[in-house]
Image (cartoon, rainbow, N blue to C red):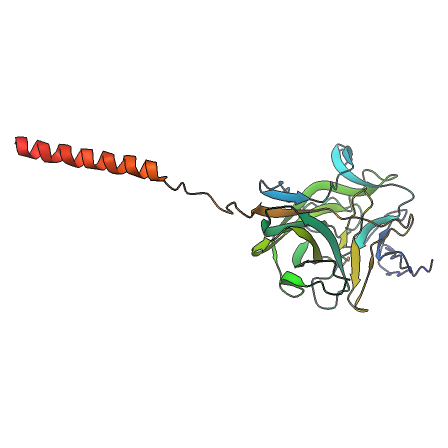
Length: 300
């Protein structure tokens, strides 16, 4: 494995290591001690609430319900050996950035109407960290009708230039290593990317996304614990590769949520449409009321 280390000299001696290998993807690797000189966002921010109209979720970001956060009681996403990748580089939503990520989902019989995809990422904060105000400012999204690295796959909706971020907030989960459970430098943010209502017929689709934040640190997206088939796109080289961990070399999978409704459903509040029998009853009631009013007038 060929490893390239990028060191950024900062006042506190912060070094960001990116593992780049023929079979390993680009991301933030676990280092000790964890320090930094990034200017953090201010204080506490809103906490993400899971949507009601979930069509699909690609696995849980959370690996333990407690153990992290300022009090050691918050949910965490724990990096466990032999894995070494805390987060995959996903800073691909602005000019000059270099990576986007992709993962797949399957639409069942009947189809879906999709209007939002929520992804998860973080920007490493300077020590001690702890700010839960999201620093993400932009996100791009494309949905493909097949794997984006396979000839013949085409984009169904989205592009790599339009900012589709409509909301972002703290997911409630901290990304940590197994030896630094209460580290506060990587609060994971939920980033909601909204698209025009899009009908997806049954089949397998891929999301491709990239994020941009206001901090000087890069954007990273933490994987879930399960093995998968996610991809990473190197914008500069214009190449796709399997998203693999730099330590275990396993292929990773990513957390994301697809929102919308079934193809035969409604994306908004439904308005009851009277049936023929109900309409008939309504008409009969109106006729009776009118008849009563006429009879009353004759009596006078």
